[in-house]
Length: 256
Image (cartoon, rainbow, N blue to C red):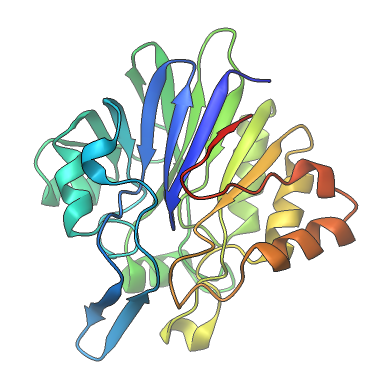
């Protein structure tokens, strides 16, 4: 046991109790329905949150990978921002939302003695120029949590690049828990290429972090998530690392 507990709320939204400091990732609390992301496209949410916003514990910080998509920050999710001691996100998010601390990749902030370092993320295929991807989908960050005597936790954010995972793993070789945004999200962008990790990529990401337990989020609850737990289980089994995959159940605290 690591002294860390994760409770999946739905999609990319999870509570992480990091030895008494409580983090919330990408707040999404709206009900099922259709949510526009442009003049001609909507994202369809299939299930609501496993825990209601008013029932959440006191939040020390929110780790917001980006603020521009309703499957990562929705209207009720924005209400959660005011409840948190700190909100850490991208510099772009800080320019749009009052009270957000924007971090460039590799910059850090402290939350109750936990060092939170922003790390790169690419919300689209790495075969395409990074600037082109960011121009289409916006700026995204992941996060690494560290504290004295505590295991290191990586929260990937919406990232589809194994090169970035490799860079993060090189910078933090002792990652013990990897919370990977999976689901192989697909829209009309980039000819339907995955915008988050596929199951096969998640297994490869695990290989890059050989000591990490992998907890996937962002793999259920939305129609544009094209892969789920079954694909993840199959990929980790094929790679011979099935024991390192820990699947969270919505609303149930997972002791890691």
